[in-house]
Each structure stands twice: as C-alpha cells, then as structure tokens.
Amino acid sequence: MGVPRDKIPWFPTIDYQKCNFCMECDTFCPHRVFEQREGDRKLVVANPNNCVVFCRACSKTCGPEALSFPNKPEIIALIKQLHTPGSGQ
Amino acid sequence: MKRAILSCNGMDKPEGSVAREVAIRFAAATGSEIICPVLLNRAPARYKKSLTESALIVVDGCSTRCASRLAAGLEARVERKDLVTDAVKALGRPLESSLSLGPESIALAQSIADDLLRNLNAPEATREPDTSFEPPTEYLIVAHDKFEFRIPAVDYFFNENDVWVRVLDGVARIGISDYMQQSLTDINFFDPPKAEDAVEQFGELGSVESAKAVFEIVAPASGTVTAVNPAVIANPGLINEDPYGSGWLVELKLTHWSDDLGLLHDGATYAEIVKRKAEEA
Image (cartoon, rainbow over all chains, first blue to last red):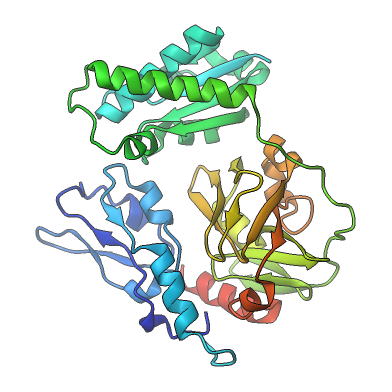
C-alpha cells in the first residue's frame, strides 16, 4: 500500500454477543488473524496486522454475522492521505 | 430453460426459514423443481438428471452458505444466488425470531422471490471480449510446496487483494490472480457488478465464489464498469483455467489511473507478496 501496515486500522472485530464459536472464520483465514483460546472468549483477533487490508472474506463465512470491519471509504481516505509515492512498504 | 432451486432447509434460524419459503414461492411461480438439501446430501443420485438439465438457483439463509456449498459439489450451472441476510440488512430491522414465519417474513420471502424472477427475465448487460487484449507471454513463478503460482512479468498491475488490472487505451481489464484462483479452488459463481456502475479504487466489483469462500473483487482502479465477461458468467471455471486471459471479469473506463497506479504493485513486487502469503498460510 505504500503505507506501513500498522498505520492502517483494518481488521475484524468479534461481537461476542453474537459469536457462537463455530470457528469457521479461523478455519478459513489463511493469514492466522484469529487464535483460539481457553476460557469464555474462545476466539480472539490475535494478529490484526496479518489481516489483508480490505479483505472481508472471513465475515462472509460467519453465519451469526458476528464479524465487522471498519468503514471502508474512511480507510481508503486514510491510506490516500498517508501515502507518499516511493515510500515503500 | 429448465430451472431447479436449492435453498437452505430453514431449520436453524429464521433467515433459513425465509430462504425455504423463497424456494417454495419461486418454484410455484416458475414450475421449477425444488431440490431438498437434506435429500441431496443423502442421496445425490435422486437429482442427477434434473441437475444436468437445469440451471440452478441457490438461496442461502445465512453466511454459513450450506446451500451454496452443496451446490459447489455438483456439476450444475448456478444461474443466480441469493442470501437472505443481505435482504434482511436492506430491510433495516431484524426478522421475527420464530422459525414459523409471520406476515412480515412471508412478505420478505415473496419480495426476494419476485426480485429473483425479475432479474432472471432481465439479465445484466455483458459485452463480448475485446480481442485486442493479448494474453501474457512471460511469467514469473512463485513456487511453494507442490504449488506454482504464475504472475505475468509485464503489463499487469496488482493490488494486495490479489486482483490484477491491465490497461490498454484508457480501458482497464480486471481479473483475479493465479494465486487467488488456486486458493479458492473450483469457482462456480461470478456475481458481477452492474454495467455503468462507478467504482472507487478499492471499492467492490462483485464477487466470485467457490465451496471454500466468497471472494470480493476489490477494485484495483477507479472508473466506470463498461463490460462484464459473458463467457465467465456462463462458465466461471474459466477463471481457474485462464485467470489472466479468457477468465477476465470486468472492464472499466478509467477515471484516475495515474493516481491509482501509485497504490498498485508490478509483477515483481506482487510476486513477493504472493510468496509471503503462501508461506503464512
């Protein structure tokens, strides 16, 4: 993106009121964004910066609609604002 | 054309019950055959003949996509798909919580069935491929385990969402990379954007779908949709066979190409991204 990944707040948020811990999202995501844990919250977003910016594929596996992402136009605007040509990854 | 409809069986949540009702209403209005998902799972031979002869309409209740996943395992052509949770979001209020449908849920089912019918009778405009786009001749190869991912060495630019763009005379042709088509495995549905739609860079240009996932096409450039590949609508497997050539998806008339290009990667840089993603998985 030409913007450091940790400056882009794009990653899923789990609504624990809705999540049924079916783990479909964790099974699906090839980038290990999620991790399964012991205790009440059996699933967490452990590696948010592994999430591919603008990818929402995990939320499309979620039957109970428990995963949400930030407002996309706002993130696009932020990236364009932070982007400096030639600044690298 | 004969049609068959496969829906969620509606026993887990109200959205599923609505999907089932959509199937019943659609079948009644069109004379289509209803495919029972439970019987299909248990005794697929029962539907073998009708699935060979019919185009399939698939209605999922929720994003678990049970009906879609069943459909992906069949040799059937999926003509249209619908997802009840999308219709519920558009409605702006939650469904009644019972599996037995109340008047509002029945009205929703009827409106989804009506929309399906309307769309089938007025298919999206498509356009024949522009033959001046020659397929790539030189590839970079990223090898990982037993897989090899091809990336055109020149003329193609990529976003980090595995979508390519190639530009000729102000027209951009867009598709998904070899890495993504292999990750998705057999693609059985392409939900195209509407012709004349304006899209911003990183906006959405429809989606492609396999048994594994629904993959949103993240626009590599901003512009207006001028064409959708009719060959891929008819046979989404072309995306797997020839992702950089005949499996293209959409053409755009570009609006801000020089700005957009600054946020894209050339083949060599995209090859590094593919290498990283393959190692991460």
